[in-house]
Amino acid sequence: MASQEEILSDGRFSCITRDPRFWEMPEKARKIKIDKRFRAMFHDKKFKLKYTVDKRGRPVNYTSTEDLRKFYALSESDSDLSENDSKEHTKKKIKKKKAKSKREADS
Image (tube, rainbow, N blue to C red; front, top):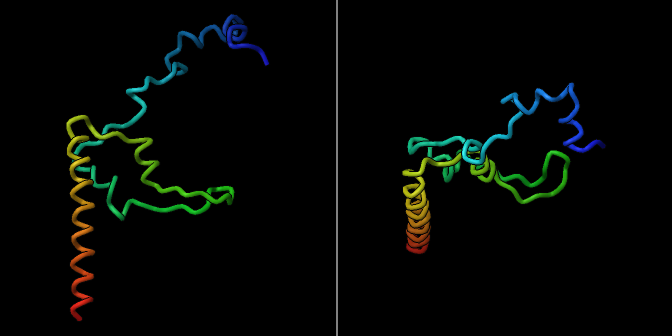
């Protein structure tokens, strides 16, 4: 394989360095910013799928929520809110489970 410098010094490919289509995407622009209207997709059951095998049949322990976090980012003002919401969401689940177990015990 030819090195990157050799390729760029070749006259046929010299325009690549000046063409913005071939520039590397900056870190900040890689993730799409999501506002507070859509923050529920990070913790809602409707958006969560659990994969047991990958596309080639190998066993994995993977969820679609990880994909969402890889491609989307909450806007800076909403990221604090989402952390608080996720904590509240887990607290509500625990309360529901306790209430459910009490009802079953009473029955």
